[in-house]
Image: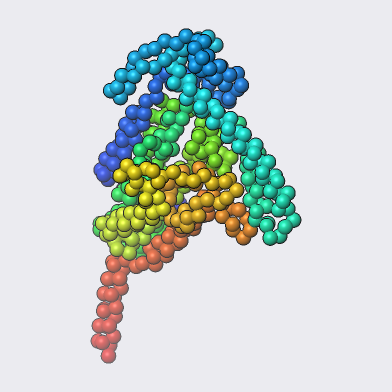
Length: 448
């Protein structure tokens, strides 16, 4: 065990002494912090949401709606002010709200009213869904030919009826953190940077020892080969976890400057883009889930690079294989929406309006969402709507199937890598055995 920890320490230092690792880590972390530090929420909007953030109450809703109705009817005085936004001078109105003790921008009150009504509409939809699921369960009960429909509606009923109270949040910061920006971002860019960092840092983990002649020494014993491989694997896995955590924490800390994180344990459906999320988890729960799924994704590429390195014993081949696979998997993950992204690039957005689907229908029957590891870079698509598959008569979420496949794929790659690495004899031992064989032949010849 002591030798194992020494090897792990050796492999861990070998990764971090590479200058390119520190350069990329600083650049990518700095870019993430820089990007999110520029996401500024208008202080006037923050002022409005400081009074309404939290569980929605009738009193809060009536305060906002009554104020806006009186402004529209001319029953409450407003004052106009000129502000410069994006280089343009705009005139906006402010109105006094005695209950809150100050004056507030009318436009932001209208936005708050819109968000509150969206939350109320969702609650009404939730009640409707629960009632519809109950009716469907009664309809399909004791029917062998509709057993899946019964189980699916039972699942919808349990999830919808056990959902916690939603929280009204100012969503600008969260939208950016979950990659719902108003610009084209087909994949999660920061997961892409984490992938690139791990590919560059770990591609030499299984090839550098061959170059410096260290591998033949350790491979003299069978235990040495297995122990070294385990040390390399554990070091690579820990590097994936640590680097991804650094990148995510840098963004979260920056996000905390402009976003209220006090309700991070609120149901994820509190974020309007995740209102149809089928899982009863918190915002923090979703972040943690996505983190570990991304770690599995990075581990997949690490194992792929390790396998290529063992077979080819060249850094550039290991890195090249990972790069080609990453490009292919990313292209396949974008394939279903390629026309939409082309419309965005060419400013032709008329065909991008997608039809709404009923909650009881299985949507997104794209096989790539199960078999393509590259879908990790579009992980939010597994959380924004109901997406279940009929597996032996049971509704199983596509996310569960995807994660199960990713774990199985990693296990297969690990076993193949383990087998090849431990069974592979070193050039040194082969040369030694060859010399021994020639000496034996000479002695036999002299004896004859």
